[in-house]
Image (cartoon, rainbow, N blue to C red; front, side, top):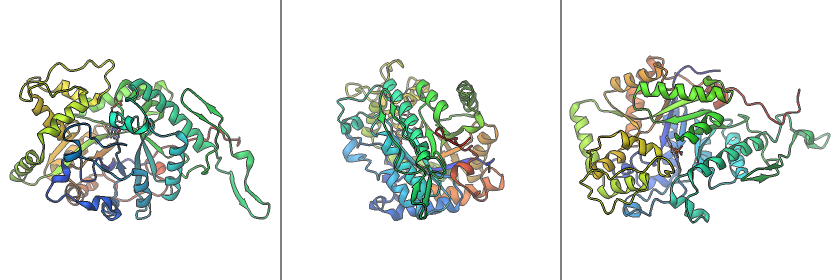
Length: 444
Ligand SMILES: Cc1cc2nc3c(=O)[nH]c(=O)nc-3n(C[C@H](O)[C@H](O)[C@H](O)COP(=O)(O)O)c2cc1C
């Protein structure tokens, strides 16, 4: 059954919220972030509010090669697929979306993990495909340096192709468990892939049957040229940073063109905008919050973030002077979204001012105001067709989630922008995404 309301994801960048300094908020959790209970409570709340997915971001390293890294932002995190497998046992309807890198895994591993998560959750698994861009990650996988951007995307494209083949290596009718005949499977319906490509050589079949969704949902967030091409070819859901409706509509038009070029139907591709929804009920509350944010931030962390995003050593520059010339886009291997955002800012801002802006997740859309105002903005962009839904990137957890659920969600429901109840079926069915045909099917 299709859904004509917006999709809402509860996004975890850090367990304590979207800012790298969220952990310093007076009400932020402490050691609880290493317990199941912390996530289970949030997941149950999200499910009671009929959010669509719990989405967990990931890096496979500690961001520790910058001065503020280890001391101020060590970002330890639980492995997302493991965590979501545990959450599948305490939830019933909500989608479970885990980030996993195509640069530091093998297709057989991820095909198996996501197929298993899909079984355990009865069809609620999604995979956020990332190519990983931190040099610290490469160093954990035997590499001297980060593989270059184009290479990472080529590997990702073949990686997803092999994962899909592995999910298809069992036909739906392959499992017999026929005690009389003695056939556990129908051997005609379990297939080797014998894949041999540029990056992978995989015989198959997978040792897990075809998952309940056929193919768990594939999500992609890269916004470079190769990122958008990969999304158009492979993704069911695409994350974007949208700063206004006009830009959102232009982005969608561009993606629609790319989808048609590869023979895909645009309605089968859901675009979700990143948004920081913050409820403040009075101008004083807004001011207090802004002040708190300024106090919680750390200047070194701001400079480090800029350094990491831009791959520029800024230690020689005066933090109170404007930024030196930015790197050229061609061959740029930092975070392209950040490069674009910085280009859009006033060139007179100082290095530190820019760093502090980025530290406030300024690449996402801050929607701050009363519950009515937040609901208005979210309804407006959805109703205009700029997005199919949102990644709710709450700056502070759990407080901002609680405020959203208590105050904004009822308004969105009353306006028909948020659904009232879950539809039956797998996540793919709930989101109105078509079934994927099995490429090895012997049925005619
Ligand atoms: C909402 C969102 C979530 C993301 N989550 C992750 C993540 O968990 N891990 C990661 O390595 N990159 C993550 N990224 C980064 C993207 O995968 C991608 O590398 C980035 O947007 C740059 O695009 P490009 O690779 O096409 O240049 C995320 C991006 C967005 C917009």
